[in-house]
Length: 84
Image (cartoon, rainbow, N blue to C red; front, side, top):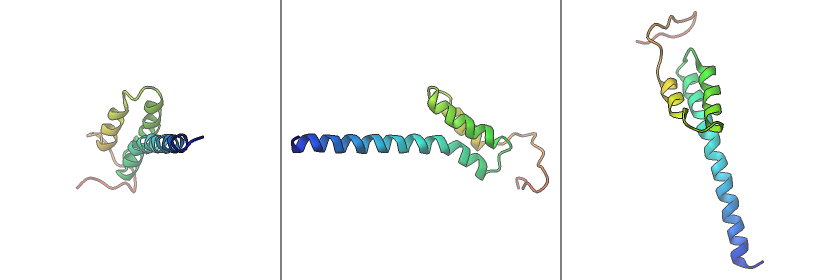
């Protein structure tokens, strides 16, 4: 194999690894935001974030928006902080 072949394989490996890392970060992002903001449906958002990545990516932006919102009629549980 020539130098260009080896270089091409190295570039391909870097692209595959960075692509897998980006997919992992995008899958974790909605769930992580929801957990940090103490969202009442944080587990559903986390599962939805992963499922939408592997089932077509169409609803992933919806999961992100859902993670950043809190229901208006939400009654806080014991020990959960309330909005100021």
